[in-house]
Image (cartoon, helix red, strand yellow):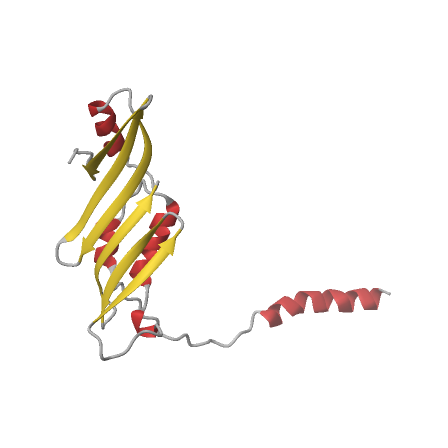
Length: 168
């Protein structure tokens, strides 16, 4: 019995040593290229809903070259993206660079600065609906606007603001 226990003990001590011997493995090189980083910088808003952020990331990372609609004959490609909260119409060039987008989201979340400026201008009113509009162009940057529906009892007004809450 002692011999069996001592043999099991020796195997128990030696087995982890054998398990640690591995041969080095060469890994493949990975190149990460952020082609559409300008788009993400221009349209990122920390206070929008998570699905809107995820859709923006999906639009930025979309690879038009691996799409079934891609052919070398065309200069631009228009691709539509949809989620229940909104949609994006994006235009890509033949290299996969994002040229422009037109985006529309319903109830995507209103930044605090917009909410504060609207409430200062329209006290006793509440925001019942909002639409977030983004127009992005590679050379001109982005234009963000909010269409808001305000209610005060039975009264209803509609206003438009820019991304800082200035009434347009």
